[in-house]
Image 1 (tube, rainbow, N blue to C red):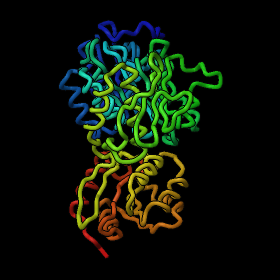
Image 2: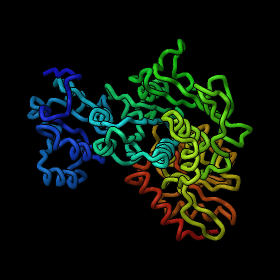
Image 3: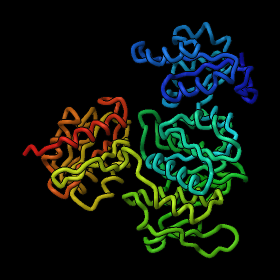
Image 4: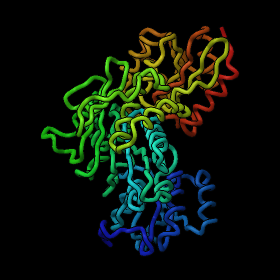
Length: 467
């Protein structure tokens, strides 16, 4: 059975297999079940781990198909929906494709059922903060706005609700972009591309190519927003400068010939309209940005330029930025004790994000880092820890590897978050920051980055000096 991809409509003619029963997979089941003729679900997880999801399926009348029983249903299936995080080249997915069943990412399906224009954003670090900020900007401008994707809630659940006059703001990961087919956002944005997920990709070039798929289907009626200061993003148009077929708008910290948005004297963010009156217009003062760190200035510029690309009011854009609150687990202050500030940056899951976090403070830092490595290299992180911290407490599988790259700061190890926070408190003094910024995935010790951050916050509130 070879089904033409263009004929897939996700209507009453389809019999759908959802692969993966995480948050995205369960949302796909819930959204698609009333739309299609039949829906099945499968997952390679253990029976105990899947028990709650399977019970949810049974209550909804959706058959769960064990991976070794897929042969019985694949002849009936017309299309499969792949949850993010499940490799497209995994054995089960290859088996489904070999049966002639097209496999679409959840993001692709979300796009196909969406009636509203989509802003799609990707990058290695800062994605969720920037996505949430863009959502706040569109809401401030008066639009009903749905925000979803890699930010934490399934995109398909948001696009199913959106009307043609609304906007959908989507955070998309490289994993989600791997299996798109016709996904075409009205506005796409790449904020940065730095080493990450190299346990999944063979090279940085392969990782970047996955990111670049965000603009692959865009045309002259669409807009691409990019960070000209990031060398990989700046190279996205290709050597012949025709790879991006959409209108391209660029932001940077200093004005260049190509920049539409830039900083003036490091004090204000300025817009140079690409059409009409070309005279630069000040959007807002950098001092009014409520997020710490130079990297967040980049995030804010990306969000502002997306808003301007959509034709939003400049005053509404600036007002939304000024009122924006940091997201949980992203440089979030969770407590203060004995003059020591405890900051949760648990969502920093790659070395570049940790380096950016370390540059956000102008006072002594005791860092808690480590976890499950994603195949990235830690030498630059080791240099940053050596130059910008007084001590580092290392946890998780990557602790020894990170420690080998730290040459000057004091290095300690801990086997739990409670121990890590207590040890860090012992190194810290009044006026210092104890910063959880792991640079690694959480799954060796915690169920999620959120759970890791929550454990840090709990421990921080009972921390005491152990000198």
